[in-house]
Length: 379
Image (cartoon, rainbow, N blue to C red; front, side, top):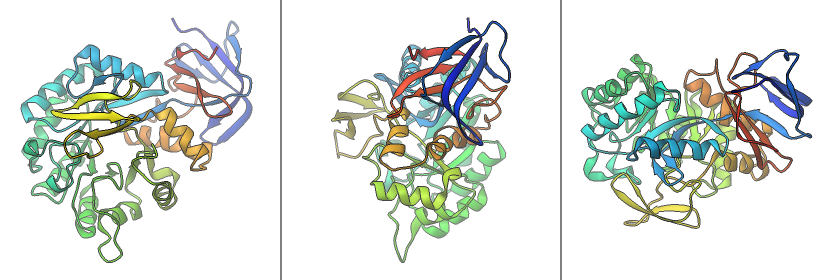
């Protein structure tokens, strides 16, 4: 059982800034405003304490797939990412047959009801064949609102996000349907023009699925979706900061233009995250992971990532020179707000879940706490 703890002597990152020689009080499963008399005091020796990471786009890890694995496999993948600081995760699916996706949604909705995952993200099958990436083209389909509704219903209230190529027939109506049901409509794997992207945003789309990747490049005469997504304050842009998906200059451009409050750092992780190189399956497609980079065996397209959010955090601060506070917004607060969960996760405030990550001076992970229990003990 969780006990009362005072995590003292730390650099604590709060929504208002960083508190030097600060403390976080944990009472049971939650953060408290004051310490019980019998609380255990733990001196963290100047380490950073930041909110637990929130990943809104994750396909698996630890050798396990959220799309096709057993319940035990899914739990293994969840635990793998918890070991790397992700205390809240949305399970993402890749393209599959509609009957298969509805069955999987029903299965994973049970894990959502148990609090193991924060919900379900359908990345496909409503995406463009021109920008399919690591999705099976034979299984793609236009975003018919009736089909979109089937997936929402199958998730039993736990559908959090659907990625669509909104320029396809039915795309705009599907965006409106998703918005009406409180599900995030994400623009991605798209061949849309600038004007078509603006139309989708006006219809209710609020997220850019892994900005830059699987969409037309930014052009000076035909700016395409990237310009529309970056300039609109209603859009949160996902960024995969693994050093492979984005050049550092592209990452800096997006972060600078969108601002710290409109970026969500994601992993887009597949089975190999936290596991190692080798051959894997991403849906029905075979993937080879070499030197931690995942590519389709046939065609060589990048197939998700092997990223974990602790690595994304460290890279953002040490390579891209973001402030710790801005990185926390992008990796915890912003995705929690998108999911409608900021009242319980995403920041270190009294009353919220005791989800936190301990980092040393080099921003290497030292400890992870979820709901008041150490997943990774810092000592």
